[in-house]
Image (tube, rainbow, N blue to C red; front, side, top):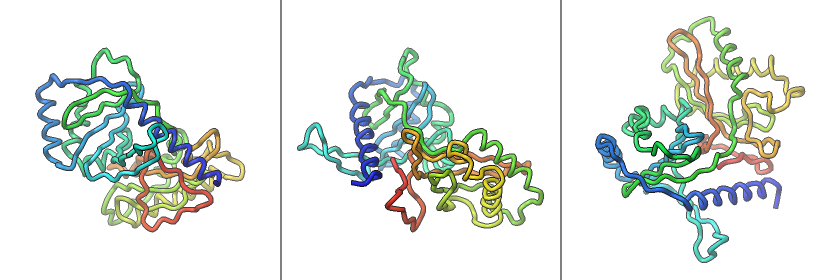
Length: 292
């Protein structure tokens, strides 16, 4: 078994352990606020395929949302505890609620749920005395439960200080307004190579054209001028790949780019629980991308 296959198996073991342990201790909740009850009822009534929602808190801050649908695909894994009962793992949709790109998709795909999250209604029934820093709030058609959660993993990311530097670079070089701009927003999925460079990439939202070209050309120029990879380690790159025990691995990241009304740029990125959306993507079997 090659190193990357062993690593993938190890990630899977920890992932399954986390799922098993998260279900051990849970607390049932009731919603006192009638308007919140009404809104949740409307959310589930609006989509018959909706099975349950899972709000994820880290340090008591709402960070993520998993949407489980009855139509979600499942994967069966060997159960090391009860061999006769394989573990069935669902593949829900995940939205990082701190990432503008995922908030855009949530608003587009689940407008009622976006409104619910945006108005912070989900906080109305989290117990005030809850002493857990990291927890999941599971909301289903039959009830609501508070569950213990782990702190999560470190995924591919946009380095904060380098990111600010890069946005300054975009702003500084934007001297002539882009003609015939159809959309002032882009969402791009890319592979972060082990070196920290962006590899294969695809536009998930927005028009390919001058805006997209400007972003890519400015990125190439910034990297060439500021990040000579023969001298800079991975942790000094603009986009950092997933790291395990200090070793970088090829990973996915989604990048949100917006051209504001005042002709300045906003850039953010998220590598947490990304799904591969690039069409016709061919992975490298000797160095596959790490997916969770």
